[in-house]
Image (cartoon, rainbow, N blue to C red):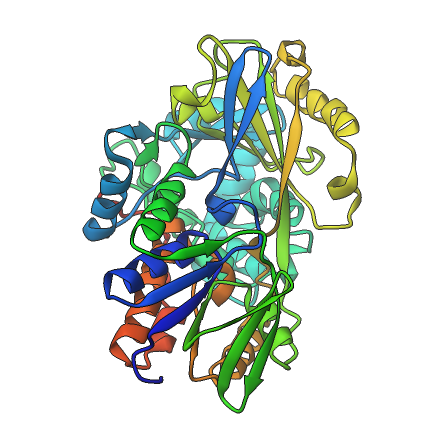
Length: 463
């Protein structure tokens, strides 16, 4: 890396970018943040909707703050203060008219699962000792550990719906950090009534701001500006001036901005393509359909996984379960996550048509769609999840190698490193990237692989 810069351009005002900007400013380095949207937060933002009965707030997805990093938790507590609540997560799986506890519970499975599923799972369990784990792809990862019965019932259809590709085309990396239990033998052992082990699963307790997850980054943006940083909104980056291994200027919103170094959270393939390389890594998009409901509570679940392939959404969320202040008193709201990509029929469908489809989903799930107030809107994230298809690792490595030729450029964040990570890890990446520029030590590889251990990524939390 170059010597310590006097001025850094930060591309993107999401969790990684703002956390990096804050660290740089605290070190006495001038910062200009370029953000393509009209407000900060990126995928961690919150949208406010003024409805007939009052104010409703919707996040871009199911956010909650969990972290194993006490320093990072302290930063968030300092930013949000007394408005940072402690909430409890409850999740269930909805499949073929049945509701399963998540994580697995012995009594619930015996009461809920059809006899054919139980019989098939037991048959698979007997055969598993004779097979070895197979990490060729997501489908083989699941079947070699859980058996074909659970794969066909719970994983195959849901995974294809979420990613838009056959599970055999999805990398096993996705399973390693998202599936809570080790294998079907582990499930059987842990489900025994005498078992005392806790499943390798998610953190139930988490922190959440009173008025939506985006408050964290609204406060962070305010602090960046208080410390002398400049945030320029409505400034999408569309080009670079570079020579040799040095980025001379960034083109955004019709203007050109120069600085000593560039800290980017923009997507890895986008950055490669803008700097003369080629990269066809892609992302899976999400459409969030948001609607107020004229009822006190939809359920007691933070979210419900919708595993049936014929249901267009993958999750049904109730923002009130995170904070009662997300809705007017005596009312609630629903948000359905609909995986689709820009230009697809589900992405382009008008809200009126989508509302009709969503009402069908609610009725199928036992929620009376007549409780809808008739108000609704959609929000979109075109790069919600990095699409980790089989072979993506080599493409990612080539993309990183291309960008590493620029001595004064560093990438971080979910899109910037093409990693499925949570907010706290994005923020840690931002701090690490800032430290690289502050200290002049080239440890970019450490940032790109930060928290990449093969373990479920939300099990530990000091929150």
